[in-house]
Image (cartoon, rainbow, N blue to C red):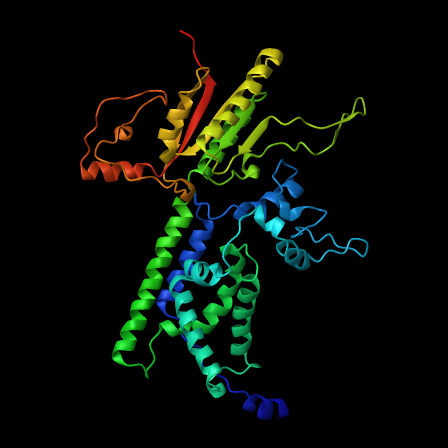
Length: 424
């Protein structure tokens, strides 16, 4: 009786807020996007920091373990293998690793203002810009001593404010600043400033219009970025890996060599290769053995085409030696953005013993490492051709519509087949 009459009366129950239809539409869309197969490839760590590592440990297939999972100095632990004899504090290792400029030089150095000036607006667009402007106002009030207008430290708002400022400030001390490092601040950002997009009764007409405009801009940018990163950005790598997996399984005993350039790395787990590190045992003889690798993924980043074809020549020479000495058949592919076709063609013509032909094209594929140039009116390489060695000398006069069409068609991933030149 006491519980009913006193405690429950002291609790101020509020009627639940009825969620608008837009909320349920967005929630349903989020659910659909989770299930919908997407060809977009946001960042290499999308795979190499989780699925790639777990697939190797659980399913015992060949994977590429990144430096973060180095057992001698792990930045991440995928299965929490910690004991008193092997005490690992990965956040401390992260700070120690990033405090050494020698380590950061291998990944690239950035200005310390990159998170604030570039990464926050890039990741959170309008929300990030609004947060920055409000924080400037609060900083001004703090300097002027107007503490009553600031959130209390012991409040949930104060907690969220520190959860936003402190991580960004600490990570800004390190000269290597990737946008993914600050993704967790999305939670305090939404809590603190998400409601600012919706007009209040106290707002004036102009302020209400501004908030509504910012809200629509936020919606539009999120839709554009969802399509871009979900289906266009590095969009050719996933279907290429899928087709490569099928070809590997259908051509048992072949060696496969794949060179990727000016694109992200192919997630190795998608190829479902048998583990070359697992130790097998022959039940008849009792001898142990390991499988020799048959698929080789060569990742050369944004290496200049001249140096890249030196690597192509080395891989091709070794594959031909194995073919003639051990009768080991092989397939050799180069995956490159279509925007580099001219450079690829020019460099391939310098190697008489190597024939490089187009195999398949995946569209769309956006790679900022090889952003295509807008073609001029006499761009002869906008014409379709069957072989990379074809040298078309005729003049091509393109109108603006053809130039735009040609420009858009360059946003693709082209796979080239490397083989010996056929002697006539």
